[in-house]
Structure formats: C-alpha cells, structure tokens
Image (cartoon, rainbow, N blue to C red; front, top):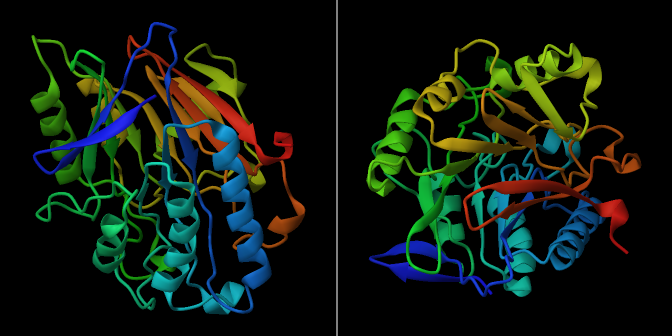
Length: 331
C-alpha cells in the first residue's frame, strides 16, 4: 500500500514494495468542467458522479486532474462566474473519497472574468487535507509548477512526477490563441531533475499538464502514415478534422527540449475532450487522458466513448503502462 509523507515541507510519495510486483497506480482525470450554477446543476451532478465512480473503480494510489476542473463561461454554458464555488464542488467529492490527489491548471480554470485567479484557487487546493497541490516557485511563469518524487522502498528515486502549468492564452482571452510552457519553466524542470539525479544517472520523470504540444499531432500523423517513426498504443482522435488544440501562434520548446534532456518518459494532458490517443514519439509516451466533460462541448452529453479516466501503472524499475478506464466499462 503506497502512502505519502512530508519531508522538509515537500510531499514525497513512498512506494512500499511487498514482493508481488504491485505497481504504483496513478489515475489521470481531466476536463471535468463543473459549471457551478443552477443552470448546469444536472450536468454537474453527472460529472461529479462520474468522477466518484471512476475513482472508486480505479484502485489508484494517487489521482491527478490535468486541468479544466471548472468552466466559468456563463455565455457559453450558463455556468457561474464563481469558479471557486465550482472548484469546491469537485473538492468536496475528492476529499470525501480520501485518496491523495492533485491538480494542474487548464486554460478555463481562472478565466479573466472569473471571481478567483489561479493564486486564489491554488491557495484553496493547497489547503485541502488530501490535495498535494503547491504553487511552486513564484519567480517563474505560471502557478503550480512542482514535483513529487516517487520513491522505492529503500528510499531511492523511482520516478519524478512533474506538474507543469501550461498556461492559458497569449493575452487575456480565448481568441488570442493558446499559450505554451515557457522557457523559464523548462529550465525549472531541468534543474529539478538535476537535483534529483544521483550517481550520474538522470532521474526518470513523467510530466502532467493541460495543453498538448504540437509534436503530439506530428507523431500522430507519422502513426497513420506508418512511417515507423512513432508507435501507436491505444485511443482515438475524435475531434473534428483531427484537431489538436496545441498553440498555433507561438513556438513551444517543451517537447523538443525534453527529448534532448532525456529525463521525461511520458507526458499526460487533456484539453481536447474527444481525443483519447496514446502514442510514443521520439522516446516519449504522449497520452490524452479520457475526459469527463458533460458541459463544455455542444452535444457532449450524448457522446460517451471518450468519457472515463486513464490508469498509469509505475513499476519497480521505473517503466510504466497506460490503460484507458472508460466510464462505460465500469459496472
């Protein structure tokens, strides 16, 4: 049974190995999109019930929500400006379930017109009993860039779990285009890994964030063209016209820098609610988590094959498996 300890003010995941090869299991949830208003009450109840059902079925040691927990967009979904209230609705369910959990922010969590900004939301999440969220270094871009080292029973590092704020928009609104992970965040990631690395061997890491890099689509195109440069594992691209919501007007360096750096073995994201694809490209496993959304996409209540969670099993040697957990499959 895995448990979490705090050392020097930092959360540390400690894996107890009992000799049966039981992995450390992470459940990724994403794009829950709680509206938090009377008008979205029915859809919010469906979303929260799905969260509870998936968490209970997952047998996970740790739950990570990769952004867009809430959706304060009144003119699109009749949701509330009060994104803190909507966040509290999700937190009430997660805290009742009692599993360690954490979040990274998506582009919708703190829209400019919403009542609470990311700092205020982060204060809320960080104060919860079971939530491991931290603001991270205030001198770098974003809010919520932090790491949780996953340790073996002997105290050696198995995998560094890296949580990165992929930011929101280039200016203050959706129409300016999506932002990307900034250079100072990339340097923070590298410095964190260098600190955790021992005996000349670079620490393995998995990255959790919201907005996908452009290379995810690039890898997918190589998959369906069967060039041999990328490996398909599972899932689908169900967004219209094979859409990937990566930043179109800025050149993100995160993926290319991680390929060169050599630590990151997997990236887990959300953002595109109908995409559930998982591939390996240039040595990194790229995975869209199954989404929860009943609220944000037009007609999304009537779709179901994309809805669920994603299981990430991490083994003694730092290798990992990724398995979809569709809501339809949970009895």
